[in-house]
Length: 326
Image 1: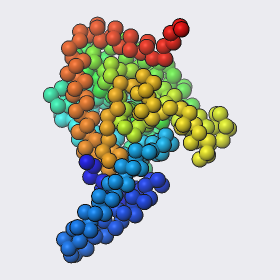
Image 2: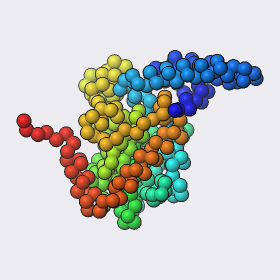
Image 3: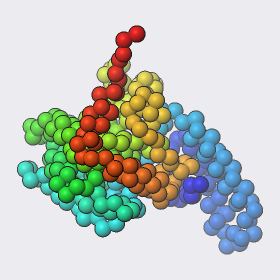
């Protein structure tokens, strides 16, 4: 069960307004000097709040799922590093141009497993978000990731990636430095890396920016993440020449971007459940689910010989969108 924190610590989404009103009442009771006298009333309100949250999130539409994935308090790579990793040692630079804070890389321990962890970082404060380009990596970010993957292969360490980006940075300088080539190189090299690779979409999974660290033996999504070839707004702007509430919703519905859609279409292997009300309401519980899934996959993948992993990875991706004659 999620903690479902009171509204003083959680920014509200529009579809959560009825829940927020209940949380305001709960908070008001908790802050009273004689709060213990209202324990029964508070428990009743909390039960109603949890019931309403469950109903809202069970019926969540694709565009609302996107909004949850973008929640400003949703845990990012740095949060999960703090919650599930021990002995994390960050590694910087691509040995070519520079460092990109939009992608974090480093050695870590997850449970009993030593891994190379790589993930998108959007940033928390406004200055950090600007520095991270809101999670949109430059080519040096993808080259940094690849250098660290090669290092992991050299030392026989599994690679774990956390995907959370609306897409790769589309600026002119990024293109001049080889954005498309950097992503394409990662796709090729990840497909034949002789070490286990686990990829999880923890928030947004947009376009080539997500795929640049998304080729793995096991690919999963958190329950309220999204994963698609393009964002709903980008799709709407192309198809209808205008991105507004109506066209964004239509695009989100058409893109089949939710975790359930991606699992049904064979693009991912698993959905990792989030606590009631989403990861932003209980990061610790989300991290526990994430860690449990990662550890189980690592136990399974370590049984395979490196060359067999590469062959199985090849066959896995060849099956996606395969068409057979009738």
